[in-house]
Length: 203
Image (cartoon, rainbow, N blue to C red; front, top):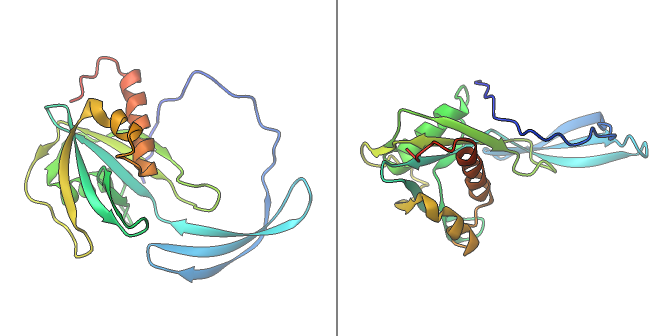
């Protein structure tokens, strides 16, 4: 799998005095296709007590900002069964076995929107919920994205493509139009990229 050297900040927080918990044992509980559950028993370094935890095992996730020559972000609307609502998001999905996050981001972009770009720029990654989810979500930028054909959706997808001016993303978060936490985090990573590359013109 590809390794990415994401830019580091110039500020260092003090070293931690915390110690890792010691894993005593673990066992697989259930497999549900896109995720599985395992039970881990770990010993607290502070109390010496052994505590059970349930861990959600998922593959890597990826998402991408396709940005057109007109400085518009190609976004998608789709119905989400968890919240039972239609959401506004950026293209993304699961990284398949043997696939890099960058390759998955481009594949998802083409499949879900019909847009493509020859350039895929890594912006960073987040850990969706390290309390009980094991994976990470990698975000990419696809400048100069252009329509290359129709969407290629599977039977479980019903996706509408919409273009949004790049400078309106923050407003859409502030007014509650964009509520998907991974998309909100991705927008922040995009803003950091823009700050670190002041000469970048959006394409």
